[in-house]
Amino acid sequence: AVVYFNQYGYIISIYVSLYFLMFREDYLWFVVSLAAPTLHMTALGGAVRYEEWWLAGMIGFCGCGVLLGIVFLFTAIVNGVHNVLVLVLLFAIVFLSIILYAHSTLFYELHHGIVTPETYPTEQYCICCSPYDL
Image (cartoon, rainbow, N blue to C red; front, side, top):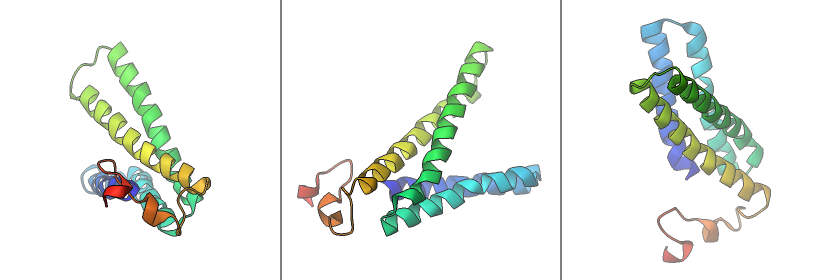
């Protein structure tokens, strides 16, 4: 699940970075938006190497994104903003929450030794099927 969600997060992050560079010509936001793809690549490296602390940056990034999204959504609703901004914030909160769940679950399983290189073949599964169906 981490690899699946990382690929979409990575692609979206690259598009956001390019948007800031090409259309806004805002180099500070371009540099800041490059943090997401960097953290996605770091999390993928941690998942491949079975090292949980590589996932910590992505967990923190997504956690802060969810909290900021909730604060902005609450502020928009209180101020009477009911347009596309609310839908975008809802989408961002849901998307980041899914990524946060996948990364924190993998972190937990790696940290407690549930997933190791030796146990990976029996723990390998996705949301739609059990490991015994494979």
